[in-house]
Length: 129
Length: 314
Image (cartoon, rainbow over all chains, first blue to last red; front, side):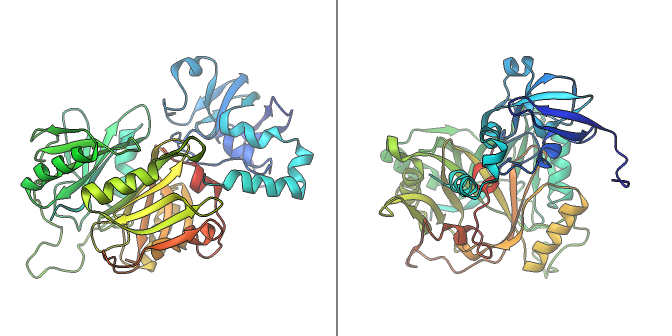
């Protein structure tokens, strides 16, 4: 887009091979939402609720703010685990989706688009008990 | 008389400066005190006690404790007996454990959330005073919230394992603390599982609410506004300050509240709401929502449940 002059890098989701463009000043989660996959959880986007857990497999990211220790332990942090809402890519990145965030990626792209699985997705995600 | 109203909430925040800025500039609270440990105490303009919110620097988000104010100091002794007779252990924290606050009775709800009761807190007055007051003060920031009104706790629930701390909390609050049930959500094949409850000790539809979840946590703390237009203006403030809005202005079927949900900079959910709904009374019949109509109970206009609203909490 001609109005979009932000520099972007490629972010790859290891489990599915999907790639999206993400600006170096926006969160990995914000970019990921543009994949249009159903059920990607955008929670508090402030590092507190822990629904957007990822592990950085390749590349570097920089912090946009603190990440709750209740959701990413010090040991996990050492292995590259973080919350996608709290980091932006510094260069091309490969990430693994983890925890709650792996659910929308566990269905193949084709299955995610079919009406039947969409309905299952809504029911499955929205039950209270 | 026992419990009068919610007194304060103590929240963990991961960036204290960002949190103070949020509660001052977006909600309109003012800082009244900072203690030696770096905890920040704030109040709304229409509240008369020293503080209603404590922000604690931490490496995570969530609720430390919620406190309710009782009418008389002697109520604490009576309630201690009743709470322990119910089967919940209590600890008495001496005056000064929290600054400007009298002795507190501390205990855990069946859901594991820490609750405290106290009878005295330093009086500082509302910002308009008591003598022929103006209806509102000058210089309000952001939404200009009147008072901390209630909170909603996510409570561990696993029907298959026979765990339902929503029901346990509800019984405890009723039997030990004299709260009364105003609304409930009943789910399951024969509608026999109490999955969410709203309870009052004042005359408003809820002073506390409990919702079933895989693990216990804080869903939101809520602040009161005058009118639907103030809710709209609060949303404008959030857009101006780039505050993450969770649910844009709408109405709840449950409690009839006009509402907007958003997150503080550590991801603790806030609500500003208007409309006192109805006069909550001990003899008012309890409202029940079925699993099929739950969507309308939560968001009356769309009737759709938003996954982030039910799954995301701190």
